[in-house]
Length: 324
Image (cartoon, rainbow, N blue to C red; front, side, top):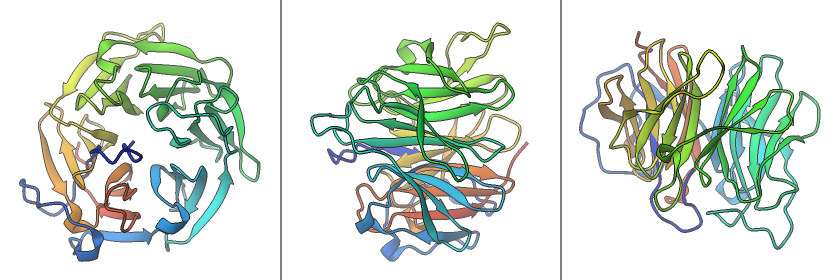
């Protein structure tokens, strides 16, 4: 998530291209002078004047991507040929509501269940709208779990097997958990490692190898929280550091190698299991403040919100090495 309204730095984006890339990153560029590498292509150039700044992304079986447009309160499908279809627009909050840390209403993480149901997070600073929302195919959006008005739900992860959703709260430094059917969320994990250090803490979140993984934007860390046999949160492990302003991330292959989004630096970095990391995509490839990514097979889809470049929010596809 970017500090869009205040214009300060955010986000780290990571991806691994199959071709050999230089370890040293080039200076940030906008897509106005970008020349993507051969295995990187634009899926869509989005309409900045219409508020189409993608914040988070999930993939559909047919090759489309579904994204949240952070500040236009919209969920939209982007087809493989780049067409955009708005699926839902969330209600406008009361005029006196102010979203924590951001002021404006914020539409964050999104995931898709096997049956096509979409789940996403909405923060408004008002108790009547903030929380987890659901959109069934052909239906209308419905809030199914209430979060506190002073919360900033950001990243969202789905445990299909256990039928639970995990939500990273960037302001309260908490990982919330709720059944996929909705209900009252529980504070699954709270720890100093999840807390903010000036702006936003817990940000991206994924379920991977019997653990909940979380990025901390302010502290530049990737955290692993084991899920115990009882379903409770184990001790927080710091698995990577030095990734200041890390936004969302995604794993490649079965191991713990991941791709992480570096928003303000227009970069994608590969983070290895030992915590070391290398920049593999930059603004020269078309990144404009990347916010999130999703991986399927040997391809990574990278969403750029252009929060600071204000030029070309877009969706890129890059061929990757899935690793082992």
